[in-house]
Image (cartoon, rainbow, N blue to C red):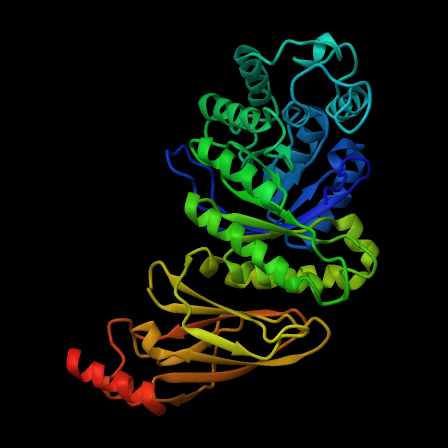
Length: 468
């Protein structure tokens, strides 16, 4: 469900893999692990910014996304960010043009003239001194011309948006939950993206899509038209509504949909879990569960909605975020080099309301070793996962299993070409394991040809001997 993000000072924490933007024909994959925060406080007095920066430092943040704010306020915030080496995604007033579309505008309502004035006011504009196409009032019928659009983009790039002045700029926040069914919205996004690509020195635009089918359709249409591709792709997912521990399968399914889209278009995907209260949701353990299920699905980062609402959930919420942040700091460089592979592992236990937790197999782009990401759906207590790995499925002899979070070996049992190990996971916790071995050394034939029980095993053994 769409949630208003413009009326109160809020912060939105996210973790993502990024690299300095470069001019390229192909999308830039994010590869350096960072922990970030989207801050809406730039629409308020700059005197509060040092306090917010302190919070950012305490949470070990590397990226700030400002959401709303006058150019002078954004400039002040970026100055502080630059001093401590934090990358930035500043919000720009063109978000209003993308959101509200072309005139004429109704007098009121979510997409009405009064709301337009409210949004534009957050960027320092007031009637009648408004940017085109709003400058002719609510009954204007003239769309934003290409010349007008490029003039506004050039003005942004000449001010706080100048990467030479603020090298921290990673992208420009220009849209929020666009709908594929809203006439002209995707076209506006593509035009703004293209204008920044032509006039700027690298960074393009970013924003957040809805998790559902409409949001996915909007993202797919946008990605098919955006060239070069965006630095990242973000989606929110607010599906926790009922009993504690439920809806996690839906959450995981959407994460998989978005991760696959990111793979298709070569753009890293950032998940925005539900971080605000609906009844008793989210509860303790559910912030972690959302984060690790998204990472296990192949998402490259986690963005939290939002610090203000997270604080209202209780101190446990910030502790869970800090824990995920620490984990991502440790495993982030590895995650950035992993690609989804055919699953070679299964999991039993850690299911909570479900039959079992989640295990996903990845392959390292450089080492070619397999990695298994395990995530618990039990959000109410500690649980033990039993993970079974097919050595034959990896294609190489596994010498050891490494817990990537602590860098230590995990004991395992071997039976034929099957390995199994047990690992305790806290509520909603996830873990990444490396299946260590020399990928040039195949599984010994004696291991891979031992007959399985029953007629199926006998048949497989005969076939192996015939065709080897």
